Image (cartoon, rainbow, N blue to C red):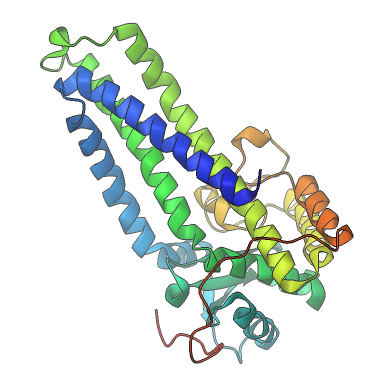
Length: 311
């Protein structure tokens, strides 16, 4: 199953989970299948829309990243300017994160608001070929609007959590109409316990799927899967040895490798696929000259790789 198909299936699962749990909670609390579902979705939507529209500012502030001009980061700017047209993008703004931990991320709700950030450690550690592999991965995220996809996933997962909390407090304080509900309390309690965990696991699985997709699209567009494979191996070792000291673990899915843990942990609860598996897939691409990635995206707009004038 390809990355795009896998992502679509996971989105279908999390939406189905939300409808099932939201309907159950609504029937229990409001005797209406729809009312509580709408309330939970609205709460999650408001919070995530704020995050979506201000995501680049929030992430740049929390990581202490500084937006730089091409003259301040000529090597980074040269590579991004070279790669952006290959993805049908205008060159995004650039930022430098003041940490020796080598890593990179892309943020911004769309192409015009995108920022590609690299840490000081990344620029020191990688050669130009490896740096191109990493930046191609990040530009693939920008082109496929993964911030939008992950915001949607977070909205639905958050709505499931809010629906569970609504039902919990209704049970705790004896909400009106509970005695008239036809919902089995045992079934409801099981749903309240398992549904938020299941939603989180699906959200994490979507994140991992988007990482595989960005690896594939970035490596295929660049035409050099080994470049990213080599970079990932270096980054994994360095980030395990020296986790990042800026930013928040809640933002770990933005980075090309998880920068906030000092040791490996269960893949099921990870925002990223195992690096060894990512490298294996990239090397398989390199070994198969007939490999093709189904690439979709906007065509290059007039103006070439000129940078957006503002945020």
